[in-house]
Image (cartoon, rainbow, N blue to C red; front, side, top):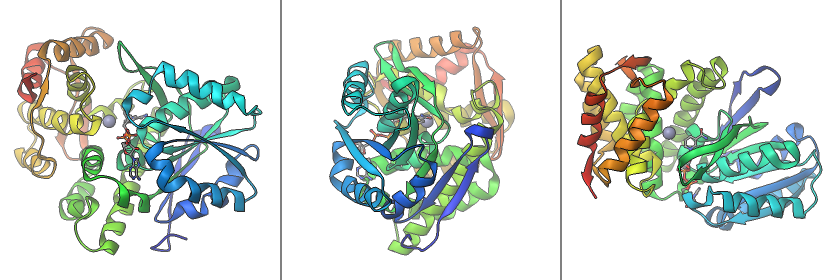
Amino acid sequence: MGASGKTTTIRVELGERGYDIVIGAGLLAEAGWHLKPVMPGRRALIVTDRPVAERYLPELEQSLRRAGIEPEHFVLPPGEHTKSFAQLEALLDDLLGVRPGRDATVIALGGGVIGDLAGFAASILLRGVAVVQVPTTLLAQVDSSVGGKTGIDTRHGKNLVGSFHQPHLVLADTAVLDSLPARELCAGYAEVVKYALIDNPPFFDWLEANGAAVLGAGGANRVAAARERAVAACCRAKARVVAADEREGESRALLNLGHTFAHALEAGSGYALRHGDAVALGLTAALRLSERHLGLDPAVREEVVRVLAPRPVAADRGLARAALARDKKARAGRARLVLLEAPGRPLWDVELPAGEVEDELDALLVDS
Ligand SMILES: NC(=O)c1ccc[n+]([C@@H]2O[C@H](COP(=O)([O-])OP(=O)(O)OC[C@H]3O[C@@H](n4cnc5c(N)ncnc54)[C@H](O)[C@@H]3O)[C@@H](O)[C@H]2O)c1
Ligand SMILES: [Zn+2]
């Protein structure tokens, strides 16, 4: 059992594709016990990256063996470049090399990069095998490990090739966040703030008082409790949104608050910018537009700026604008954004003049 001795379980209600998200400190040591009941067979193919493998692979493998599961591991280089056709091909070849059956389970142990790549590989390996997500970054625990979106990047942009492949289980050990570099914690925290904004006012207020602890300030017990609570609150919000709209027909778009700008900035930076850092900037732009068009209280943006302290980034204005234009084209030529009337009252289909959206984007970047 975890350091705090308790776990939180959240169900993603998707009928026969439904699954649990289990959250708690120390869960890695009992992973075998949680995984065994959801695995179709006994073979576990663990996909991870080097820094995560060094710290956490032995503990996970030990725990699986104790439960009678046979683990094998596949260690990839860290970084966004790993979400590529080349790495996908190499990984699939390596996975096939151990001759898995259709009852094998891929285990994604790592951040969003590993989760997206391993999830995609699982969805096409032998026409689809089970995947379990074991997220190890704040961003992956609060966002990317839940909801079933998988994929890789291409030279045309991020996440343009992929699939929907729901995991059989998400196991979020919040204790592993202790080793996460501060920059990665901050990037993940931008998604936490996003959930607080779209979810409900109590969560936003709670974050005002406890956000620093989520980021690691204060005693170990307080930090651990704050992280468990924040991850659970975000997963609860995401589970609700995904259950209502699995494939982003409509309301799942709520999760894109700030993301139209974030994706444009990421493209403009040549994908050198962390996703979470781009989201922090994108949120401030979305909130500014929300003040102008929906009467959002400016105090909300002031609080978000205080905690995320976003700074304009060096990016290519032309590339960023082109990404914005592509985004608009993908939405039948209309610039539609997620905006906020108040914390907990988002609207996902606000149509705005394109020029105004471009001006907001411009304010987020300095020429590179
Ligand atoms: N599928 C989705 O719904 C979804 C949602 C949001 C983001 N994403 C994707 O997620 C990716 C970003 O994920 P990320 O921010 O987790 O980055 P990441 O996976 O690159 O991890 C960041 C770094 O932290 C290291 N790391 C991971 N866990 C650690 C730990 N516990 N201790 C020490 N180091 C650790 C990794 O080795 C890596 O170097 C992007 O590709 C983005 O597109 C996907
Ligand atoms: Zn995001």
